[in-house]
Each structure stands twice: as C-alpha cells, then as structure tokens.
Amino acid sequence: MYNGLILLAGTVLSFGAVSNFAAQSATPAKTAAAVPVWEVDPSHSELSFHNRHLTGRVRGGIAIWQGEIGADLANLGTGSVDIYAYPGSIDTGNKDRDEHLRSEDFFNVTKYPTIRFTSTEIKANGSKLTIIGDLTIKGVTKRVALDGKLSGITKKDMAGRARIAFLATTKVNRQDFGLTWNRMVEGATMIGDEVDVEIAIEAVQQVKKN
Image 1 (cartoon, rainbow, N blue to C red):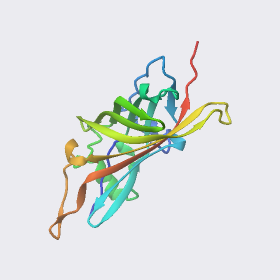
Image 2: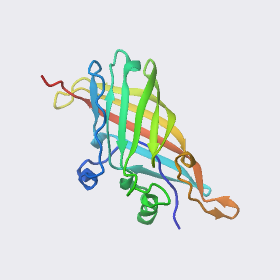
Image 3: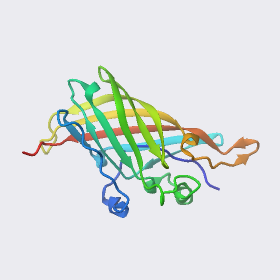
Image 4: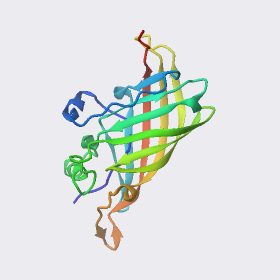
C-alpha cells in the first residue's frame, strides 16, 4: 500500500545526482544586475514537506533542486527568487511509495521533470518576508505565498564568501495541481489534500565577473 505525497515545490542534498536529470534540467533566470545574486548551496539547504496519511503523517523531501536569489540586504523587498526542483529525486524513505509518487498517478516525472517557483513580489518587514509567486507543477501554474524570514548572515565563510540563510513555509493543495490520486479506507481518504512545505536555504553570494 502506498502512503503519502509531496509537492513543490522547492532545498537539496546533492548536486552530484543532477547529471541523471541533465536532459531535463533548467537554469534559473538571472536576477536584476543591480541586486546582489546568491546561489543556493545544495549541501547546506533542504526542501521538505509533510502531509496526512490516515491519522498520521508522512515526511519527505526533494533531494535535487537548484536556485538563485536576488537579495539586497538593505532592501529585501527588491529581491527575487527562482527555484527549480526535480520530483524524480523525491525521497520519503520508502522505495515503493517514491516510485508511485514519480508515476502518472502523481508527478508523472517522465512528462513533467521539473517543478518551478518564481517570485512576483516580496514584502519585507525587517527580517520577516512574504514571498508571493507562481508555482508550476505538472504544467499547472498557481499563485502561492510563502511566509519566510532572513535567518542568518555570514560576511565571510572559510573561502571568504558571503552567505545568507532563509527559512520559508507554505501550504499547498495538491488537488490544485492535478495530483488527485487517493483511496478510501474505513470511510476516510488515505491521503490528505493539504501539503505543508518547508524550505531552508543557505546561499552564497556570486562575485561579479569583469
């Protein structure tokens, strides 16, 4: 019996496996030149989710994703976010369930290899953020809002590079994106429709090339 499901959209265990998706991969759009650009560090970031299964819940994540953030630390409201995630790398700790999630019943990763989130507006109140943007899953695009915050700044890491960290959460209804598979068990649905998504990002500032 298969349990659970995953969305998003959106942070990362290893880029080494990205080569398995080379034919399907995409490159995040470049942010405005006037705003500092930060690249997601996959080894220090995470894209995870959980949703209801019967009376409990299932947790999981997308292992392979990439993204760029435009962030002026003096004016976060001028920033931008562009994230690509690869649902073929879904990991819920159960091989059979993961294969089911990759199938046509759910993400249909052969036809729809990527999930994308692109911000359209960022509202900043100190370190707190509301990130509004377009989330595309299985060819369906919906406007979503993430609640987030700037959680840390490192001016120089061991390699002399500046780093920033963000946390963001949102709730997504899987039905909105055509992820409708379910089963009835004792008069109730096996899988909940509402999926909680959490993104923890550590990003490295990109040095301008002359």
